[in-house]
Length: 158
Image (cartoon, rainbow, N blue to C red; front, top):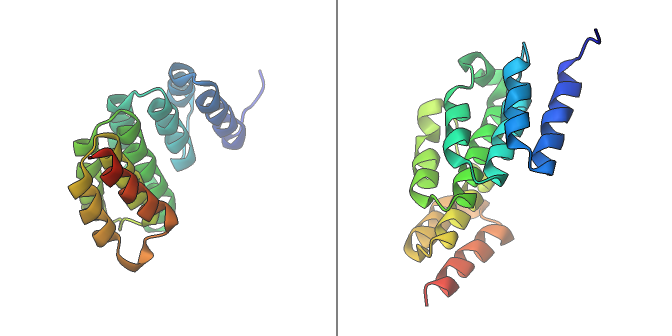
């Protein structure tokens, strides 16, 4: 039997994400002892691309707390951002906004990527007022992507 390390397992889960094989990604994650935050993030991403936002949220909720330690804050934020993006792909703007507003309870502060994903979720659902509020909330950290997503939300609302 071949011994697999976490890097090769994460590469396989990421490949499943790119190939649209979310169920295979979940099976690999379930079989992996010692899955890390990258494993969970890749599986959440695979679910997001398949518009399986409920499964993505369940994975986020099931991420072991030990993976959210102070050392892993930036990696944990990537998991949350990936879950917000999954909600965007599933046109679930309310869930995306809920995740964004819940980040501080997980001792995480939203970054520009968090806001961009939430604004895109509002854009997908033509909730331009929410998009503009999020643009304002993003503050000086807002980038070109943030502004473009907010403008696209306004354009769709005509």
